[in-house]
Length: 84
Length: 134
Image (cartoon, rainbow over all chains, first blue to last red; front, side, top):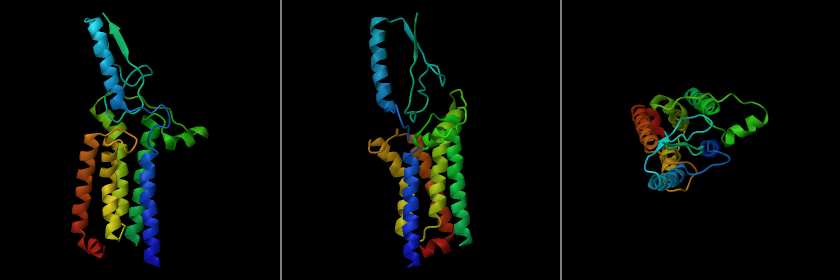
């Protein structure tokens, strides 16, 4: 009986661990950063086709930047595109 | 029994540490939202992008989570459940790769998870008395 109880609470604890991982994802405005990046890059290539002298400046972790530095970034903001 | 208690306490401590990193360095996530509602927020500490700052923000909380699971699983006597505990983190990451679980797959996370898991397996093998009871 004791062993059964122990197994039950350990199973619940494991489930709790999984839930903590799920709860560490963004609650809102969550987008898939891979898809976002791919879309962004397609847009960027299109922009380059229009203006070959366009340059891109990505700033990190301030209010108006994309943080592309890590693939785990699910919530991204926007970038600054500079044109020469 | 005493060992089990210390494993559980360590596990909770590791989880708490990881949660603190989320509160300090990451944008709001599901588990920080209730805290925000009660005004329990910390100002987000901005970090310039770089290997170590990215490690601190993105990899370390996950590493602490895996360490917490594996430390907790040291208390599990049932071998099936312990194997399940070992597989949680790698499967979670692969689930992200397959789009089954929210979040983005990161091969660095997966490699780190596998290394940590292997270290724990070695540790358990050394501690054969405990492992043998499983």
